[in-house]
Length: 299
Image (tube, rainbow, N blue to C red; front, side):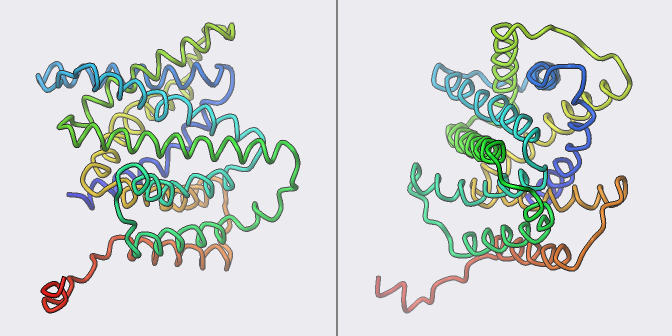
């Protein structure tokens, strides 16, 4: 079951970048993100209410959902969309892939969880592999003040994503399922984004073209309803640090789609990087060997 959820997350989030690219245009970025999560929240609430599966949330649960909506369904997307104006998408993907390490560090800091050596080693291999995959972009992009702004925003977005992971983990430990918490979190995220649009005077427009509507539906339902539910379920089952290895793998899927649709050319460093990412994936999910009985008896 975990493997199915993992593969589903990687495949969906590895292709949502196409839909995001199609959305950039006439509609302001905060408004497009608000449309996405408002529609996703509506779908989730409809499913839960019709199936009588919506869990009641207390004051603490609602507060955590508000924080999760701010981190996971609002600020991080604003950061990544804005950063994409200044730095290449490949460089953003490299920064975002550090979520594996941030989740492990934050789980250690806030939950006292030990960082397993295989998770640290696998995450390091994955980061090295991604650096090779995106080496032309990393070396060909001239440093400037905008570059540092973009990197800072990409890092802030990754930290917000990591914080949202930990908030979901807390909710699941309290017995709340991701479907219910995601519905509230996405609703709160959409409301915050709409409030930002009102404060900034953003015109409330909508693009009725098949391109925009189709990308919106893909981002809202597979990308948000299915993708975030599958991913945050993994966070509850496997822990934030192991679940976040999806963020290392989905840029690899994106590159393969790009090779098919945009003529991306695989190079020797890119293939070496792919091999390192796969090796890191195997290492992260390798179960640690049980300690010998004699050693356990001494402790």
